[in-house]
Image (cartoon, rainbow, N blue to C red; front, side, top):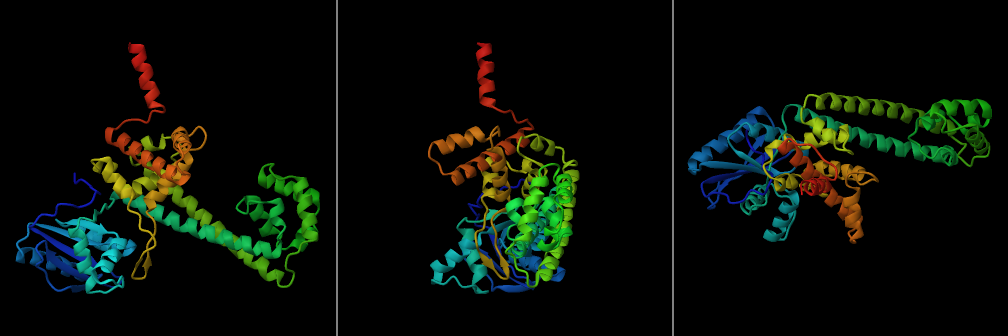
Length: 414
């Protein structure tokens, strides 16, 4: 089984051909060089089968030309644009690495005091960075892990859409009926959606009977909202300061957003259901789900981003993968984002530091020493990842308070 090291690629041998690619949406630029400076002029190839085959032929020709035994192919972490090339090269006898675009920018500034993008310069800069040892090998998930990655990316996108729609509806409700949130604070709840969808304007709400509305919202909220809340809402609607001119247009906009929200919510639920089914096909996923605080979405995200945990020989390798976070960077038409794996671990840490959570004591101990909460959460994230890696590597189970259990065993044995 091929190991998946994510540590820095150091100690490049003298007989290695270094191939770098400046990836674009339509056209890419490739460059070949050796550790002793022999090179060729940058060449172009497009994102088609013929283009990638041309890249491979250039690699083979120059490997033979410079009498190299190994090949390292590197490119910037450019989101979706690099994935087809990465998958293509993963089937070839080469080592594929990624370069942090921030490193590219800094090396450009050092070389000529200019961080500007230049097609001829970029591939050479990438080669310099790889020679310096500042590159990371690429992990490409396969099978169910690859499917989980796509599901997780889709869910992330839909959750972003959901958040944007909720923000829009909150703004529109403020214009139409600002006092609405004095009664129903959570705009995401089903009761809020029900009222806004059925009773389109404050005038309609103001004309309702408190007994009828109270019974409706009691059933919808399962007893959380009652007749007293209905009475308050009706009274506020009668004397609202909301905009009256064009109110029908605002209510129609709200109704349209509610329709979109319903669709997005269904899509997210469908994705999460598919995640659960897929995890059922992965034997070791049950070990992760048994850890208190890790749910279906978190475990699916972890497996999707990491792939096969057993391919990582050491914990520093998997830590390096989690640390591959690209801050606000630009590459072509695509904007970089923070590592999704780090984000997943961060939210998992938030769940485990709650009272009675498995990391609550550890987190409290760190913050008690004066560590800032954000730094403590990062420490918890790292510890969680180490625990997960150890469990799957050793095919073990997570034991809460393992240290105290061990001490009790030793005491009884004595």
